[in-house]
Length: 203
Image: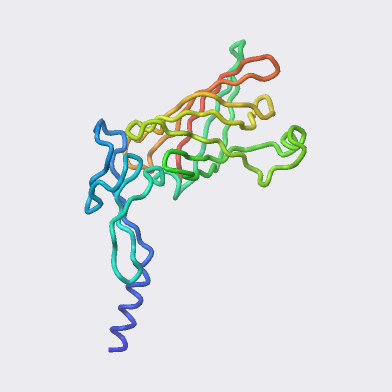
């Protein structure tokens, strides 16, 4: 009896923090604004998905979680950045190990490198960490298109600038195979630049 109780407690402990996610194609052309998987019914809005949430020793209960968690709660991102100046000169940069965070149902922040000395020069104090957040505001829950309008440290001009543009989180298979792509423009000291950004996730 004691062994049976021990095995039962171990089994419950192992599975107490599990959360099963339904990883479906978020780029489907469905026009429905709700997700009706399992017993969630119409509780999940267009920016959520139905998952099995552990209830400690009491099994699982289905509930709604943000879709964007599929891209932020495991693995980091490596990015390739190409900056083109107004004369057509192209400059290539690699950014590694960028973390992404779901901020709200329609927002993802991705860490972006910042030059702390340049930041201090412009703002009069050093940033709290060695990263700067670039915010993606998602505008379509099916295509996962987003807009970018945020200040980042651009690697070419080595200064903080405003990236303004649009992009898409391309979901070709499972969420682990997703790609973040955007293009944007910025101005610095009277000259115009365009940026192409492409990031892939690794675990």
